[in-house]
Figure 1 (cartoon, helix red, strand yellow):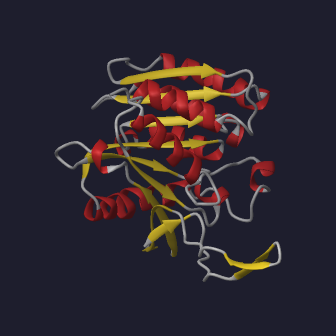
Figure 2: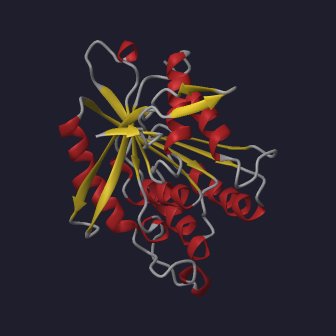
Length: 273
């Protein structure tokens, strides 16, 4: 199904202009990608997936593309502006072409958080702590379906902000083989009394296997910056031949504004042609 910015197409209607009757042109949907739904056994519900493809001239001669997955990937969420960044950066030679796959939310705070023992954490949503099931959905259901529907390589990354950033860092710590590139902006590492930081210290030091990339970009939000800086120590213990990582700050940005500028800078840096 085509993914459109405008869902309403209207027939031409009369319009009175300066005493005369004119006819307005019919409106049509503005298509930017494709959208489909898929039933998920792991999540026990149907999920909507939005896909943006680079223009054909930018696709390699093999026809194969790496994939960038994004939580918060609904049309009313972050899909449109991230797709726009890829369009501009691929078009002007700022990054390699990727297929963008957005996962629209149903219960965001359930899917993007791990278990917590902190009572105040549990109050942010009726259900939290579902990140393991969401990871299973990505691994066992969505990634195989994308490979069946589109011509893709084995290379993949994941991009997101805030709780999605938390999920991305958690995935690197718990299941690093799931993606090759991890892009996390203002990750909510305060979750569960910063339990992921303690876990990451040990696991990242023991990380082996194909090389991974992590990019963390922070705003000026103190509650985000402080735990992220403590996470830096965990990252510093990792073997740099196995994990290439960078952590930077954009002091002029807030938690509400960090995603777009951080994504532009990070996509350029990690995916140079």
